[in-house]
Length: 498
Image (cartoon, rainbow, N blue to C red; front, side, top):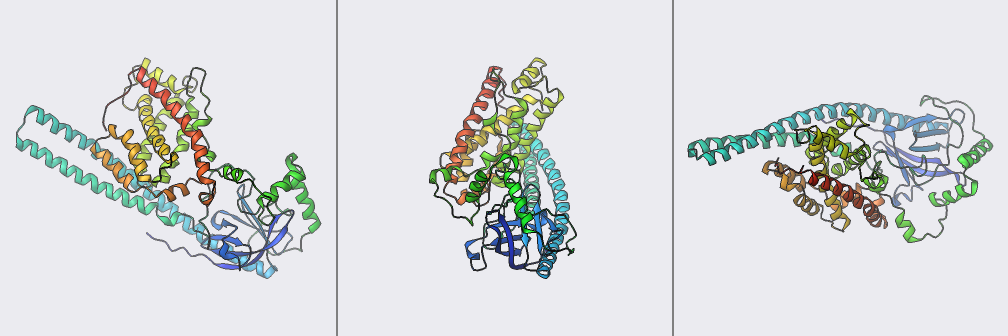
């Protein structure tokens, strides 16, 4: 069901705390679509916003003494310290912000419930699809057996009709699954864009270089201590500017950072300052990407002296690469992602059963070889076999992108043909073909690989991607090669087609 989102809109001048050098500066603020964005001035709004904050996830705090001030915070993420022209103007903003937050929170609660229900429905449909896949394989094998025995044409026709019926049911169930997924992960879940600017980045874990700074202007910590209160609270007299200055001098010198180094950083990060000349190459190298900010990387793994691959570090790195499938299309690649994550979980369960006995992937495989369980269905060795194949597919695809290929569909198709295709029957190939046809454009894919929204438009993004993949892919290839050798040595490869 569709839900109407009602948010309050407002625009006007507010003074924003920028940093110790510039202090409070007037800015043009626009509240629209659940996002508060700000610009240098109303006349300069066409240049694009300088920063924005999502109202649904921020805290709205009123100052304990300053009757014109309101602070918007996402703890550990963003801080907007604002002053209205007077108390009455602040009250108008508080009403607008509070109304927007209340409406968005109520709608989000309904949406989360709907998401949970649809997720359960998708799981049910996926179980049905797996059942039909098994049924199809049995029926196809039955046809093969009939041909070998030379059964009558009539019997073969009956079996063919059963296969046709099963295929029809499978495709109908797949269509229903796709319909639920498309509705669940529709575009209304994506953060709305502030007026006249690129979309706001969704809140996600990433390495933060300057704590609490997500806008283009650097906040030098709160200009004065504040306490939380109800959004309608109005009390006290104005704040003491001398106290604010002393507080910010303390903020500058905390953690052993001297005033000079902090001021140098302000000169780079605050757009209100005149930027010193920069080396273009250094600027380009400074663009972060998904592969330089992900929580765990294959390139960070330290192999044991005997080339053993640490189990936990490897699985963490596998989990960290899963979002690439979402960036290719969270809906159409959902079956691929489920198998990928399922294999990671099987290996993880084996490791958790006795972490001290399974410090490396090799120790898990050797243990299952010794206990004659390596080739048992759902063993960790079998899970690692398929996980390795999935990783090889991703590695080949990313290698295509790294080499400059901008046809995402072509890159995926080439990678699939070189890796997974030989292990898939015609049913699974059909599922993959459906996913590949829905692959995103190069622009959409690269836009999903940025650390900060809009970075893909910077001249240094392409070189940043090349730099990060040049480190990430060789390490990934090295570890996959070690596993290839392991499976070859003990004849663990399988020609089974699924």
